[in-house]
Amino acid sequence: MAVPRCRVLLGPSSDVILSIEMSILPILRFPDQRLRETSRDVTSFDDDLKRLVADMTDTMYLAEGAGLSAIQVGVPLRLFLVDPEVAARPATDPPVVFINPQIVRLSDEEQTGDEGCLSFPGIFVPVKRAMTAEFKALDVEGKPFTVEGSGLFARAMQHEHDHLAGRLLIDMVGPVKRQIIRRKMRKEAEVEAP
Ligand code: NI
Image (cartoon, protein in one colour):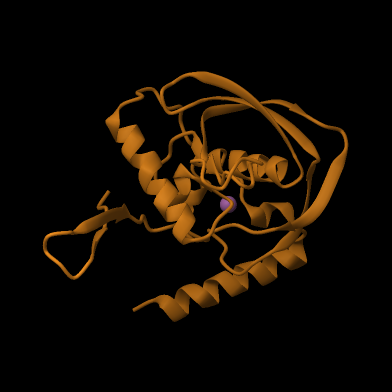
């Protein structure tokens, strides 16, 4: 996959050049069929994986997302990120990286709230989710961890986990809303086509 790279040079003096290198990956939008793919397990915890996580981090922050799954940038690997603040951590922490995640437990108690997705920009629909979710996953070094979250964090983990099975926001609504979303996304794709 081609990775567009933008290099920003700050500072007027050539003595002090602060270079910030960011890689922003294009985010696939519905109805891109790649979003329907089932992602496969990550097997090598190498530099390529770390690079992907770094690029996804930049991409998620620029898009102001609460979470991002690898398939949304066209990489069918079982990997997603959740924004640190959404994960109830300090904003200065890196995103929480979930690799080969598995649901350990979902609470019977549910929550209904508006949910959005970077692959459906501008669309928010009420979705019912478990109030609390416990997940186990591997971190970027391949080390296992377990995490439990409630509210928005639980919602984000469940939403991103759905992506890994090709399950999307549009599948969570009734037929009327589904038709409205489909039309809106098609119209947007037409507007943006060259
Ligand atoms: Ni999403």
